[in-house]
Length: 185
Image 1 (tube, rainbow, N blue to C red):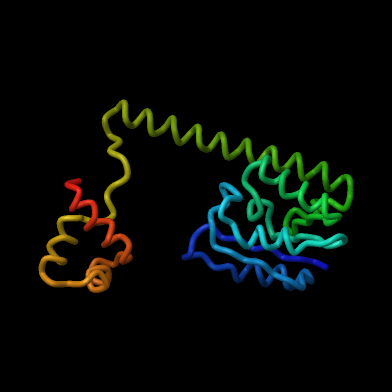
Image 2: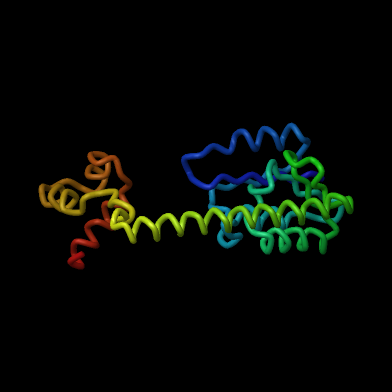
């Protein structure tokens, strides 16, 4: 059986393109989630897909980065599948099919390059931030909301839902802003 797994990083993104491609590839069962891919922690749909896989099954993803962003996580996932007698296939990197030895080799090579690229990107970002801080131009990420404005609207009798709608933010952000104000931040 072909088991599809789709993932996007944020709730604002759509899973449609991935689920359509997985269905077109013949996946009979789909697991999908909107979670960060930096780690496998908290990715319940991935855990469910791995648990669902049986001997002879193949876990299919559209792109390698939809499954894992580190070689360690990727190896653990593939090892879990292998221990069950299942395999892994990636649609956009078509040669990655762990039911074949050349697919296993290519998987490891591409995963190494992907992890290397992510490390380089982080290093460049860190260097840029350090340089900007040294030049006195980096002030960090700006506050998304003004806690004083939230407090003023709350004091004026507005509820959290109304404040969130007024400011175009989530209710949780309103509660956080009110909580921060209460702690004197």
